[in-house]
Length: 346
Image (cartoon, rainbow, N blue to C red; front, side, top):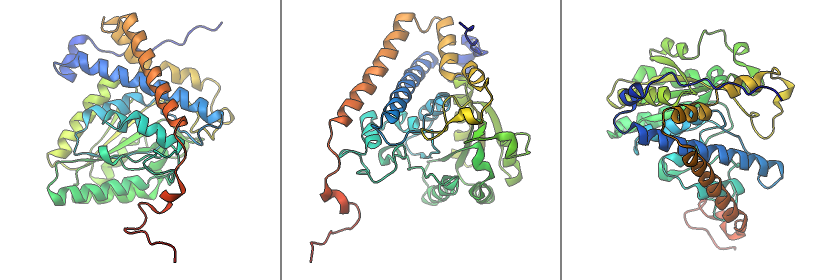
């Protein structure tokens, strides 16, 4: 049996974490860990169901949990989220029900989109979470447009645009950052750099030293953050959101993460990733990193950790059971949400 891959520990003392997260830091870490456990259980279950043909498509967010949970906890109700492929957890942390999201994945009769949207592309009006597009980068300029509207209305919200490393080579990246920089809009650009644009390694699609540095050419401050470190991510997100909310203009954060699964359920990474990629990624697992630190600091006794994991798996199982017991959308819903007043035949 091979030796276990070592966990890269979080480099903090409890005092440093309290100074970063505030007086309720212990509750914040416990809440973050609960959401991470749910995310890991959800990804494992849905990938299995997709392979069995019970859901049509799924893009796992394994490895992005620190970024997604921190975003859900740091944002305000007035903020708007424009996701890439792996930010579904942000909607759940912001209050979108897990069961509703699973109904969407099954495209059943209780799916808010009534089965019309591609699975794993949810929208959640209740938490200002806009459906992603599989066209790379379009959400960047869309978020900028909403930021323009928020400022025009005097709204306190900030628009957050999430995208991968590959999207920084797309035309919408240039258009969005240029427009936001010129008009100094309340928008936060969040690049989840998992180092693979499907099969293209990041060093083959840009010669830039980092992706965050690209923002400077548009007059936008950019920072690179360890996206597997929940404390660092939460700190940087909170600061950038506060600055944008106070009228300081747009910001860009590059979160360096490690893709721990295939790009999607349609991908075979063994054809292009180096043989040791999985072990490198596991060494930076954001869930393991937070868990190890919390255990070492006495915040997560073994029985508590086990109970959190079991609760997460139980919640996912219950949501899947409810979805599988729900019939598909009825034919009568075909014209709902299409016409203001559906006409009768003839």
